[in-house]
Length: 140
Image (cartoon, rainbow, N blue to C red; front, side, top):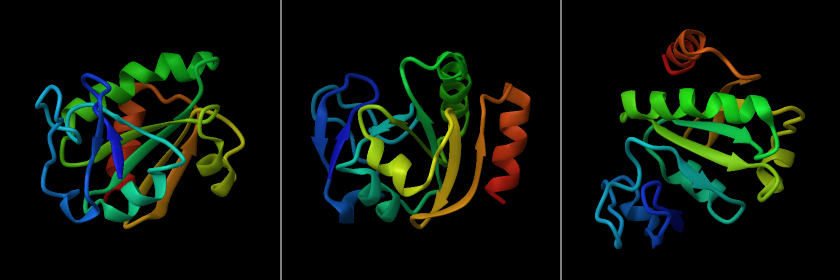
């Protein structure tokens, strides 16, 4: 699968069987899956969810969406605080298929996946404390 580095945006090929081995970027050498949200596309969405042994927290967003842009720093701060989970973002304009498959009708929508299955989801930009509470409940 192809993963864009959240630090330098370089494209990296990661074998599915090596996904949980803490892969690093071939360009900048930083961890591909820790500390910052990774970008998911139609091409890697299903593979990343299926390959991850960690829970995956996904933010479905769009560049034109004001609440999405306002929530982005909250999501990034949570990713930095919780390296034990994989945080990812799906641009619903650039990659509409995952949103359509999940019947997402409003953005931002946040979803938690375990072994490729949705375990919880919520629509709307959440304040930091409420987002942390939702994560704690969804990831029990």
